[in-house]
Image (cartoon, rainbow, N blue to C red; front, side, top):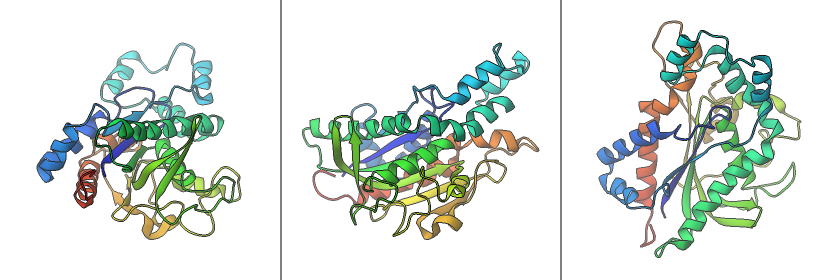
Length: 300
């Protein structure tokens, strides 16, 4: 079985392709060092077969509101805004609208957003079917940043449950059943979830609402393959990032990182640093190597 990664950004800024490229390059470098055979196998695959991004093409209410309030653009001086953007950092207003605001915007377009993630997963299955030596199933690990972590969580949760608010896990195994416009697609096994700068803890406050199942009865929110991991990376200066073990128990491993060492600046800039985090790259590379080594048979 081959390992696949889908990277999911926070909704507002995830519209720029290539957002996960720094992390992908760091992971490949780590694989070259830790498991060169695994890195070589990955490089032989077709483009984007191993690592792909989900880039939103929906317009969220928080984006429209930002343009309505600031028709001339962010009022921060242009030189300061350009400097922050060059460094990969948002302005404080962009942070409010495109990170915190994503929490509200997600509800308006949840169906479309999850649909794009389901489509990306279905394309992986289709690609395997077209390969001459394509295996019947493949490992899938989802990497989600900010609200992208909520989307990734919801995707794994819903792809393993029967329809309905109180749908139970439909199988004892970690297979994913992905409902698309063309029907149900199977063939992927949930192997990992890497959440970065995640506001999932805030969504646990929605207990009793129809939209989420964080306190679902009868078991965990999703199951992972043997050797699968859920790693939650959080920076204590990141205002929307929280440890999750207190909510989900042993299913999740909380890993503290420090994305911004500048005094007083971390409250704003730490949220954008996970895609360049050495700690994230090292853990993800080890996860990929462990899965790939454990896969047996000629289809592995």
